[in-house]
Image (cartoon, rainbow, N blue to C red; front, side, top):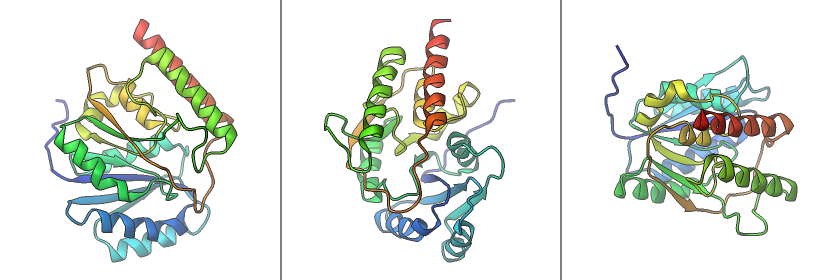
Length: 241
């Protein structure tokens, strides 16, 4: 028998983290302040951080009964961390955001309103790549991101202006139905969820300003870029054959 998905209204906020313990208290406080009117849980998935992240997680969980955390000790990977969080989530809608404070929780109420009012499958907090620079992105990363997005559009189509965003809301049912189709690795889980879906979906962007990274290091490197390119051609091949 297939898995039965029973709706439970609210928002499961899945936050993959690595060596970002000193951001977490501020992040949790901002989420709480912005989501006072909503049912939510926060699920931290830690890729076996080497700093004091675990200590911060334990302290936060003692103070907040809506917090869960899980430590992944093998095969660090953002997509795998997110998928782990999706499987542990209890609500019918999932929010994904980073733990480095670049994704400002002040946008969450607006994202949720658009998501609910229009009954969308995804709302993506998108960067404005029409600008010549984006706060928090070096010139190299900005250029690399624009090139990768252009490749996305050529080979797998345009469904969002920022398929590489890590800040979005979506219906959990989409993950449940397409779990076996996911590429399931790499650092762009949004693209995986959208482009692995074989049915028509409703996606809307909300252009926001990303904050500067406060603590922690960027996960972008050559291996990450290579994984993204492999993912693009994987989906292109699957669409043709």
